[in-house]
Image 1 (cartoon, rainbow, N blue to C red):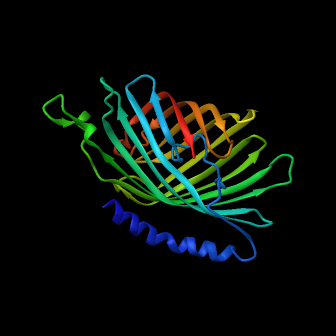
Image 2 (image 1 turned 180 degrees about the horizontal axis):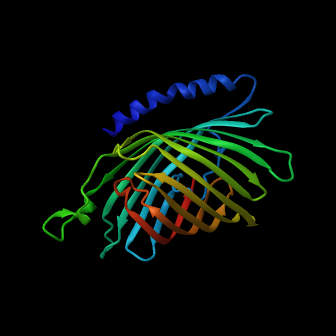
Length: 284
């Protein structure tokens, strides 16, 4: 089922990639499979490539994230740098139990393609402008850890599995002012299940990075999402931490996170959630 959806999604959108390549490759410098992303992940955004774990402080839940984004090529000219790449993520919700047991409650899969543009400006105030465009699919599933074996055999909290999937376009323009990057954009869900979910979402935020010394960086980020279920509601996410390694490449990050709003796991899409957490992330 997931493979079939992936095939259909990619067939629908592959022509966009081909058009993008044909339109800008002539007389430009092309770099295939570069070592760094053209558009770095937005620090406060929950839907970004992550390989690591987030431990919630006040309860026994944790997140295990495995995923990556890769630029297939970058094209550079006098205007700026264009890129096209792919995204493959999983976001997994687990519970911590005795004897080192971590039953898996829910998992979300994201895959898609992304396009980016970034221009460096010779300006003392705004130093960089650009955008990232993503066309992605997300599907969400309950796993065996959501089944309550301690009772008569029921789904935890009486919440049964349902079909949740969405195909969407995300557009995030940004500008950088010294060490701050500000962004604001929207997401349009051109297909979504359950069909009662509305199709427009809006997003804004900023992130900040500062070099403390060689291979050590301080970072922080805030992300606001206005999501549209039956009504509009706000999701807030705050991150602050340190990264050891390359600022725009490989390394390991340790951070504090605060989240408030609707759950970003699809099977819990209408459930209010609020938590503080500590985590780490490995950048490849």
